[in-house]
Length: 289
Image (tube, helix red, strand yellow):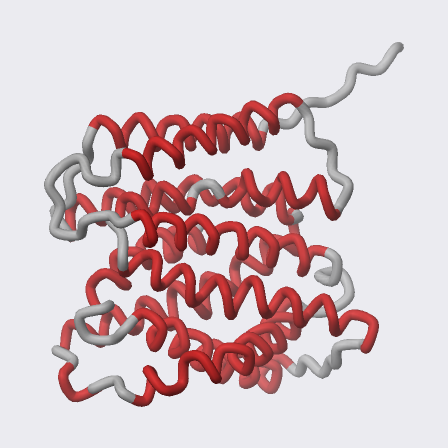
């Protein structure tokens, strides 16, 4: 729950500082650098001495590419270029993507509830995109921004599936250490030039809180809690808690950014919520006595 609160309100933190003070690519890259340093430091405090086996290295590389490089850059760019309520609600499609990918790669059952959930989620996301220009907003939504948020959700869902196969083998801090390192290395050629152009002296004092929120709460702490959740409950159950993200993000957008909650957004959000809820329903088979 705490991880999803930090992820949800991250939308507001990003809008407060990007692209006004720092461009989205640089902010995403800063998140990666910060997390890499922190997760390489933590093992010394917890006496975690692990190395990734050669057979698991491809898994780590793909997890880093999808969950760190692509997810971070696309997510930050998408949030910066769309409405915060849109970003919050579209992010909620993550557990539906997780279930679909878990069916394809982990051979989990894809029952009728997941089919209905997928259709409702797609309908809600489509309505959200079509109605993006409805209502007054200081942060107008764009088609590109909405699509980036959705693709970022798919990338993060892929990450949850990929790390599921190795969470029982390694400590989750070890996994995070390597995925952030590799993800940062992947991103460096594409982000370094813009990052070095950032004018840090132009930042007002308030911007530094929002940077702290993005870096520490919504990156380090949220990823730490989310990986712990995957280890305890698995990717599907952990992903199902994501529906709290839009709740926190939407409330913050309304009260902090003075965003308007239109009927179209309510309807689209309701379709996505219903899809996630139906998707997460569990049914037990009756046994003969």
